[in-house]
Image 1 (cartoon, one colour):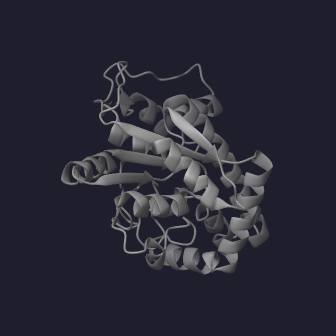
Image 2 (cartoon, helix red, strand yellow):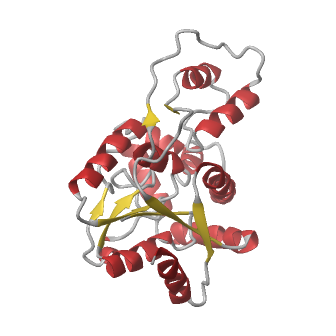
Amino acid sequence: MILAIVGPTGVGKTKLSIALAKYYQAIVVNADAMQIYKDMNIGTAKIKEEEKENIPHYLFDIASIEDNFTVYDYQKKAREIINNNKDKNIIFVGGTGLYLKAALYNYVFLEENKNDNNYDDLTNDELYNLALKKDINLNIHKNNRQRLIRFLNKESNIKEECYPLYEVKYIGLTTDRNILYDIINKRVDDMFHNGLVEEAQSLYKSFNNSKALKTAIGYKELIKYFDGEISLEEAKELIKLNSRHYAKRQYTWFNNQMNVKWFKVDFNNFDKTIKEVIDYIG
């Protein structure tokens, strides 16, 4: 059995993954693009070692911040894990929908289009929004027109006859928007309290050319602070804003791309939510 737990940050995906892994004696596979990287811990809300409860976890901390870990890299490694663990239950957990799609569907990497479109009829904002529709984790600035055009002309794609390669149940965790936004805001405050600024500053000193660091929410905003472009308080508020916007895009992507069964989280009685999910899975 393969399960995929999806949803925005802060709704309890990690907590549910541990509960289900214990119940079904499953392994857990990361599906968060930034938790792939070593040392980016606080800003990615990465699971701590003691929280794993001796459950095997895969695809966490497998790449250096200096690496350019791609969707194709993830696809290869995720499918390798599936093939090597056919006798086990597998739980994917994370909010990077493109990674899940690449791993679990007939996601095909295309060669560069020989008839390149120059997109002269589109503004930078329109180009950026078009690219976001293909990948909500886009790592290209909207003013970098050349890279956006190249991305659109050489985009990893799914064949029109899109179909899943595996039988997967997609479990989505959700809550009311105002509650979610409060959770996100508090989570950012907690990250600052737990040393996010110090973590980001140390990484930026050692890896100041890191693409991952410059594009990850929670780090890219602090880089602006380190470079003197904004104040620390402005950086914090920008992290909250970008996190809220990302959560909204995640909902849109999963609703459009995958057959997700959504469960409204009972934060006062999370065991109730766990039971509802288990009853659904059977």
